[in-house]
Length: 412
Image 1 (cartoon, rainbow, N blue to C red):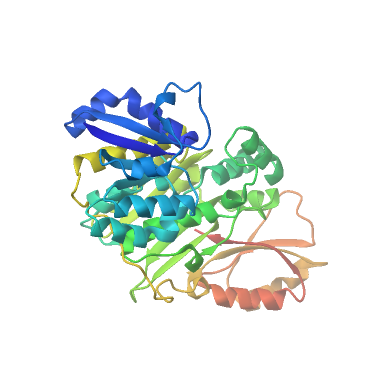
Image 2: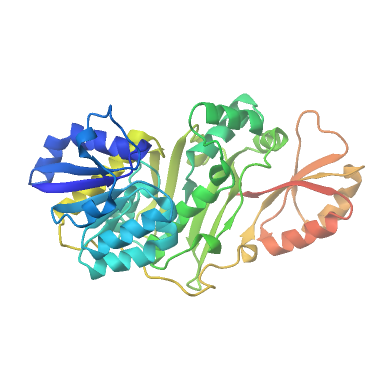
């Protein structure tokens, strides 16, 4: 009999238990042994749960029970979850998780501990919810050098931008709708400021390039400053605005990594990914471009990935799976984002913006001006040529003496 424990009985935890118990018979056949959940750890009481008899409140019961082979950590955060995970791995128990914050901050350390104690630390559910991406990167695409990973990694921001683009909702109104529907938390900062997507691109980049990319290494900006004017200008130029996380291998061995809003060409597949859906594009030197698409969050989609990792651990008990990256103390491994070449959409406001066109052309050379309905003489929007971002910013600093820089968004 293979015994499993679950730590945390919130949305993902309850979904994990529900899906595991519903499919317990088929899971047992896949593993080759009868499987069951022995414990569910949560400090709250759930007297009406059909699994109330499995509920405990003492972590040490799981830690010291030799029968428990695999533990699903779905409590979240980086305090208790880190302590629990480290102790479990040191006791030789495999851990699976949906905890993107913990993997992004402590992944290298926890993977090392798992290897040293002949067990596994798996986290398919930490990126993309129910979308398979970690395992394909580690196995199916292992024969490739990964040239780039980029995509829509946060369903909340994608929902908000979809409402702004398709229904001309303001950011504030779209956010309120997302909160009402349960897509956004009461405090949506981690989503709308790009922090959630940043953690995910760090995990993907660490796996693809073998060194731990920490969130503080990655420039991150969110969607709170996007306006309906920006949406209209983008549409008229043939683009839609999406929050994109990307990591790319550079010729000098470093990587570039960034999370930010981008103007995505309407011809690009990412432009048509709407609502709470995620899409991740991976470019390999052999396979070319492949796309992973699906629901990036939700109770059962995320639970699906957690249960998949549980099965993998049970099938490979006391055998370490080849999932790893090394810690990185090289602060220069991630290249400064301002050293990268980029084309930028810029919207300015000035008393007589039209009169600034000649000065702007002198700064940037050939550029493209964009129109929108109702544009006044005190506003201009344009797209710069491709150039180093530091040079674009230097020019905009000079321009700011004569105009307000209302928006600047990178082109995808």
